Amino acid sequence: MTEHHGDALRPGETALDLPAPNDARLRFIGRLRTPFAGREECPRQGSDDGPECRVELSPEFAPGLDGIEAFSRVELLYWLHEARRDLLTQSPKGDGAVRGTFSLRSPLRPNPIGTSVVRLIRREGAVLVVRGLDCLDGTPLVDIKPVRCEFTVQAAGKGV
Image (tube, rainbow, N blue to C red; front, top):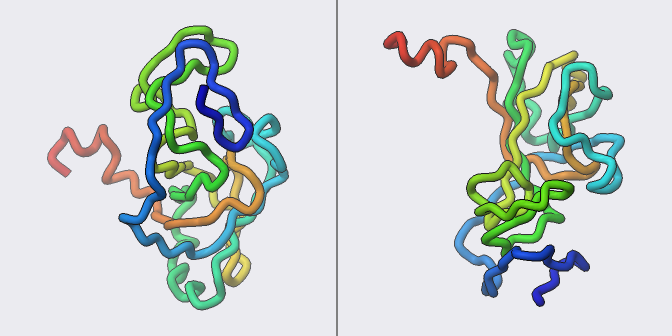
C-alpha cells in the first residue's frame, strides 16, 4: 500500500510510483492567504459569500496588476503544494465509488494546479482582496487572469 504525506490509499485506489518531477520550472509570483490551515477546513468550492482572502504578490510583480480594478472577477491559478501527485484512481471522501483522477476535480493529481474564479473586492498595492478561495493558507500563486465575459464558453459559440 502506497502512502504519501501520511495519506493511506482508500479501498480501490491506485497510485503510480513516480520519479521526482524535473520537467517544469514554475515561477511562483506570490502566496494566497486564507483562513484555512488544513484540508479539512477548506470548502469544496469557494463562494462569493466566503471569507475575504488575500492574494499577496511578490513586490516585483505589483506593476502587473495595473488595470485589474476594471474587473469584478479574476481567475487564480495556484500550485497545490501539499497534494499528493501519484494517484491514478481515487475514491472521493464519503462517496465510496472509485474513479479516474482526470474525471474528478480533486486536488490530488500529477500536476496539482488549482484554479478559482474569485470576486475581486479591492486592490491594496501588491495585494488583491478577494472572496471565493478554497485553498490552504500559504498556497503558492502561479498566475492571475481577468475574467472577461466576451471570452466565456457561451460567447465563444457566437463567433466572438
